[in-house]
Structure formats: C-alpha cells, structure tokens
Image (tube, rainbow, N blue to C red; front, side, top):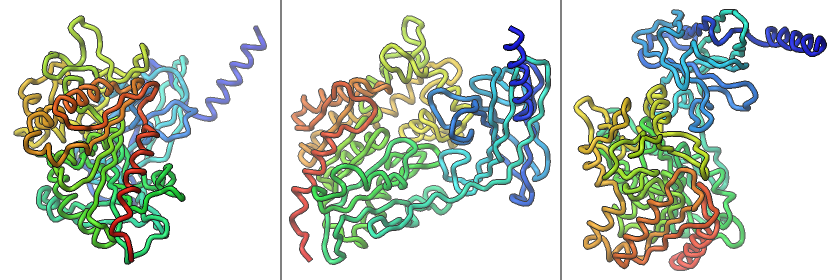
Length: 495
C-alpha cells in the first residue's frame, strides 16, 4: 500500500511539472490575448477555447469539430476586443458544452484558443487566416488548487491547397452570380483529376464528385486512388472534386435563400469553364456521399437534362418522413418521442452515440457551420433577422410547422412525386442510391421511402439497402458507376 501511494505521489508530482494542476471545483480561468504583432485591429466575434483529453493525436481546434465523443468547448462573444487586451473566460461568463468551465471533469487536457477571421470558412480555426494559440497543457485533479491558463492567439491558420501534379489541377474561379448575391467576392474552388494518358486534343465525359460534410476539393487526393478511377480498368474521364464547404456548412450545390445560387452557379459558371479548358465532351455524371449524396440527387433533379446519371451513397435524408428517425410532418418534438424518450441522432444497434438535444446544444456554442444549422441554411427561408429560419426550438425541441412547410421544396421524395410529370422523361433510369442497413446516422429508412416513391412512379432507379454496410461507399455501386462511364466514354474521344 505504501509503495502504491508513493507511486501515486510521484505521478502527481510529474503531472504538476507537465501541466497546471487544477481541481474540478477550483477556479479555472483561461486568459486569452490576441497577439498585436499578428493581428492589429479590434476583433468583434466569438472567441473559443477548445479542450481535449490528452492522448488524442489531434489538437483541440480539430477535435472541437467532432460529433461523437465530444470534448469540452467554451465560447464568449466580444465586441472590439483590442489586440494585447486580456480576455478572461471562466465559469461566470463563458458558454460551455458539454460542461461549463467550473465543471471540467478531472483529467489532463490540452487547450487551445481560436478566433475566426476567414469570412467564408465553415469551421472555426480551419479557415485560412483564422488565429490559433499554441496548445497548452493543464490538469484538473481533486486537489484544491486554482489554475490560470494563458492562451496567446499568434498562429494564423495556413492555406490548405491542392498540390498540382501532372493529373491533378486546382481550379479557382470568381463567381459573378454568388458575389452579386452576397455582396462580396465569392470564388468557386475545385480540383480536376485528368485521366491517365490525358491528351489536350481529346474530349472526355466529366464526373462531378461532391464529398460528405467537411470534405472539400482536397478529397481529390483520395479520389485518385479509388478503385476504378486510376489503373487499366479506369474509364477515360475527367473527374472534378467540388468544394461544397461554406460559412453555413455544406451548401450542397443547391440554390437557396440563405446560401445563394450555388447550383445555378455550378452549371452556369464553373462547369462550362472546366469543360472548355480541359476538354469535356458534354456528357456529365454526378457522384456524392453523405451530404454530397443528397446534393447529387438534388442536382440531377434540378438539371435532369444536363447529367447522364447520379450515384448517391449514404445520402442525407431524401425523405423527411424519416429525418434521422424523426417524421418531420407528424412528430412534434425533435428531442423527445411521444413516450418522452430522448431521440438519438446517431446510433449503432442499441448503443446511442449522440442525441439531438446534445447535438443542438453543441451547435449553439460552435456557431454556424455544423450539421443542423447547415440544413437550415439549405432548406429554410431567410428570416427577418437575415438568418435561416430555424426548424425547431433550441430550448424545447419543438418542431416549427411553418418552417417544415417550407422544407417540402427540399424533400426529394416529395419533389420527385410532385414534379415527375415535368422531369420524368429526362430523369428515368438515371439515379442510383445506396445505403447500409447499419448506417449509424439513421438515413436508411429515408432511402427506402425514396425507393418506394421511385417504384410507384416507374422511375427505373436503382435504390439499394446493403446488408451489413455502414456510413460508407458501396464498393459494388462505385464499380458499377465506373463501368457505366467507361462504356459511354468511347464515343467522341479521338484526337
């Protein structure tokens, strides 16, 4: 027993050297300063302090963006905070999730301060020019010791750019349509992946790929190694990895009252430029996963005569009768079901990974750019305050019927049924959707309902629920896509 106590004493002494000791009940203060040598103007906006239990390989500014196994996150809004001025965040003034500063559980943490200076980036601390502090280490223990953790914002976040190679070509294009809508310059960004053996005098079909939530044009680095995209069996096609990230989240290349005309700008500006410069032959396809899967289906329904096919894997809810376990047309509350049980937003079997109420509370601290707010920016009308109309009450979870009525224009099952007489001839046989019966984000039922509507209409879509598949691409579906593109790529492709 004595030996064990001595070991504990030595461990605590070592931890004291490694970081600041503070108890869960102690007065913990984060003192944040903007370095005037890095940023010399008053700052108005939100200041975050993100924590992470030691042991994770990722810094707090990355971990704060996670949806599962959430780590403590604190924030305070400031107006005209002067560089060099000390801002104190403590248990009396800072918002917090899942705990307040005065409730931090015992453990050893890393901490980092963040401010968002990039006006169009989705994630705080991950947009070019955002300011970060160095990572500081401290420990919360059961000892009665207060702690002050200084955090100096002096590290601008670097630009994240696509590295150009003989096959990968980064693309940037100012958007007249989006800039006019927002009142400041907005750019399209994408990465073009040329086929092996590309010849500038040939023309090729073009595949537009839209990544899941958080994915941007840098996903081209994974696309180049995807089965069927490179190698002897790859179709002679140009692949375009699009960037759907925006200050409100994932804009899904959909025209919306809040994000602007992203779908029209893609079709009227970016796609024509890419196809002119790199040799598109007028044949287009769509590929998407997650939020990008929903976007792929939405885009081909909006422009059915512009695409030969769309492949959507694990898409965001295509039918709002099954919005991740919630029937938005009949259920009254997002947080609780009719029996008063909390609604999970993610689950594996009977293990709940996150609940709607906690998910929403996290977004309140995080601010714009997370999933529920992102959907509101795409689906909702703009409110009198200039923000997307919320579809539920953040305090109570009550679903707002008026907003859901407006959301019907984005319910792709409903739109398919209502618009089939208008778009059916062009759309028949063009959509493939794949979802797993083990998807933790509960999108499977929405895919099934979408497939039922398609079957009723005689749409000849390929909608599959894959046994044992989770939230991921369906390999056979991806292979079928590359085979279809290869079969159609032989025409009009001679120098």
